[in-house]
Image (cartoon, rainbow over all chains, first blue to last red; front, side, top):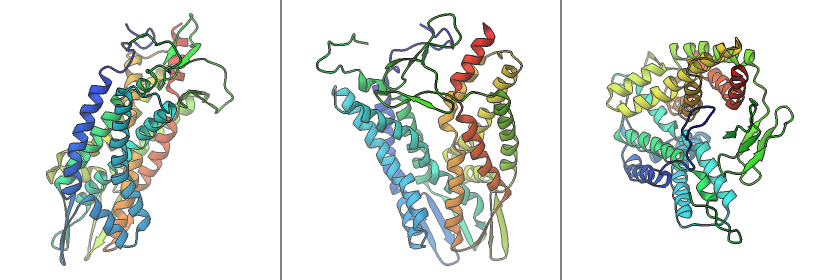
Length: 184
Length: 209
């Protein structure tokens, strides 16, 4: 069946929502390890050579006294990805176990995750900028690390996961005192 | 989703996209937003699309986009040398340094998606303003909706700030014209993407009937 106005095929729910969301989410969770353990950036200067992971980059900002920026990066790069993976897993689990509790709050959680998700790309763009900017022969040079690739993949995968989740599934389990709704 | 019940161009019923509740559409005061009573999702808003304003903002975005991409976003002075970076410098350096995904994601989310958003919007708005519905209108509108989450100019703007702070301890950092370009582009894109696209569907339906 197709929409009379815009011609899109009409689905009762996003097709294969649960299976697709789990697939993206599990892939994101696996890549989350290299994204955090491997360096995202390698800096060499006359004085030192250092490699930074996402967390050590936040710590360096904090030590330099830029605590406000450190908090922003920490939220975007650490809190948001963990929150996203955790919340989407919780939503999937609650839908699959037929949970009836706090539907509107769970729907709201979904919206929060959708809204903040793309801010995690912050560190990826910072790596790209620094790699493009810092080439001062022997004085200072910045090279990207493999962690940046894994991290970019994590952000893309969590975005795909939240896009393939259908929040209407939260509302599909009928309330106890109502007659069951027709199965989709 | 909106349900067409008669031959009227304006749908009478609105279905919440997050929980499937069905509502009768009722007029809103200007600037108001209708939210779902059950789950709180936004249903529709009364932001009358003024095609002239919207087109003007979109064309301005296109010009600002060109400026933002053509000029360096940051300058850095170290040891008597001065270097700057543009968005494309950052993308190409990342690619050459072997992190292809970083380069592709940056190019797609900061350049390609915003550019397509602006171009497709101009493609839709110019004929609508002249009282015609453009060919491939439906596909264009779907594309606009799909591209929205991947457009990340505002995140890049914050990225420039973070990069500058990271470097400020060891080098002299100064903003480039591109930085102001991306700041203005963030503002303009926020304005033009805050319009309710359903209004354009309604306009197109009026033209076709």
